[in-house]
Length: 112
Image 1 (tube, one colour):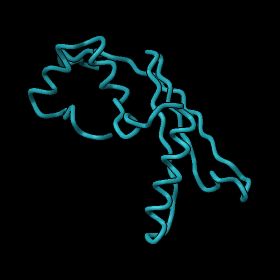
Image 2 (spheres, helix red, strand yellow):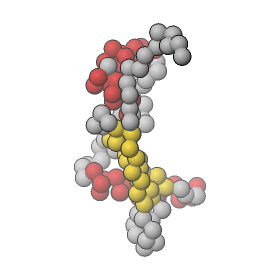
Image 3 (cartoon, rainbow, N blue to C red):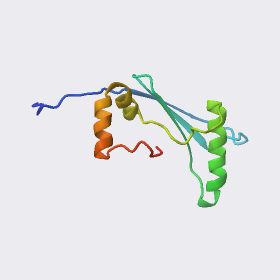
Image 4 (tube, rainbow, N blue to C red):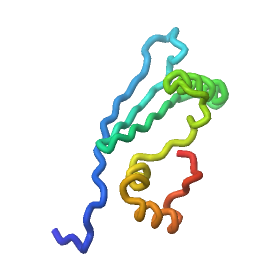
């Protein structure tokens, strides 16, 4: 097929592992953890829970507690993650990243 002058600037492969507990008496019951590891060495984690609207605040606290236990820090950086492609661009194609910033396609202050 014709390339129209297009060529890949990045090839990302992601391996996902997903974790949850089946123990109803666990403080983490209902929480799920997904870890995406790329072939470039970057890993992104996500903790999720499905809950009723009335349980949102307590669910947020449960998620935060698990995150702090998993990463073992003060929690100051648990809400902002650099995405897989964004991480690649910053570290390997800074000119592409700068162009994305200039075009407004990437917001460095946005929480992911």
